[in-house]
Image (cartoon, rainbow, N blue to C red):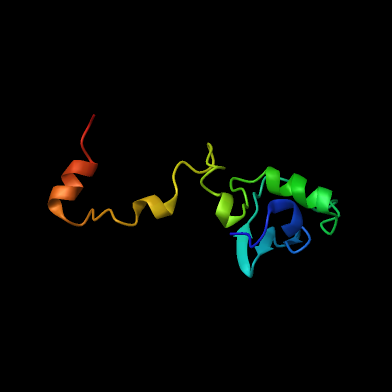
Length: 98
């Protein structure tokens, strides 16, 4: 979702502590509700990094998304482009117990 590497993109990411959203490349991402952001300087890149590291998502430069796959993202959407689960033979194959 980032147009550049993470560190260089931190200045462009906007965090609205009151609405509990992060604005990344004109897309809104909800921040976890159970965390207190009200006393945080959301213009500080170190604070932004701390807030973003506590979320269920991890903003990454799109080029690095495959190498950064971890518990937050188990697969790349690009790897599913050619799967046609609406076709019966593919649906059965995709839902087999191995």
